[in-house]
Amino acid sequence: MKYVLVKFAALATFAAASSTAAYSFGMPGLPSSLGGGGGGTDALTEQAKVKTVNSIFSEIGKGAFEGGKLILSKQKWACDKLEQANTILSAINQPQLSSQAADLKAKLFCGVTAGIPAELLAPEKPAVDTQKL
Image (cartoon, rainbow, N blue to C red; front, side):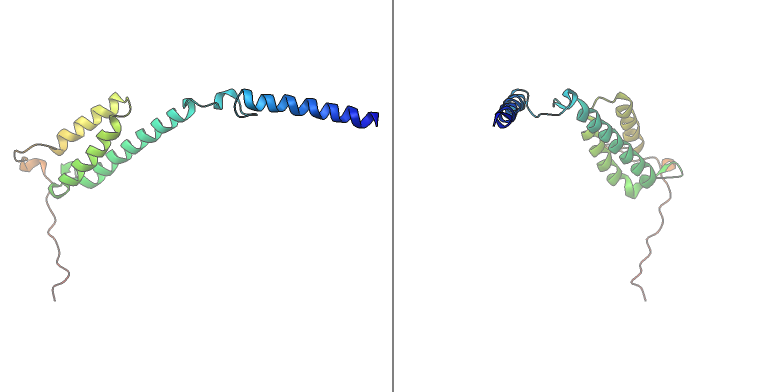
């Protein structure tokens, strides 16, 4: 009987100690570095945004230019994609990427209403009508 009481007392002491720890400091068993505040995830989301902006730049470079010259039929698409990148850039502090976006905007003639010089344009491939018999 004495053994049962000692075991019960030890169990009650353990339960009281662990229930206090669980309620006083939040979730038990987590390292303090994972306690919230976004410290680790802020860096990850910024990296993801930088990666997204770089992939948009790459996509524009591959799709809107041919031989270093602008494909006129892709200009609006490329300017729209660049606007997506600018929206992301407004949320992060990356001066180098912002500078690249400004350079790309100038090369794409985004927002320019005057005509684009012909020497800066890639030759357009004629559209092939596959419905002809």
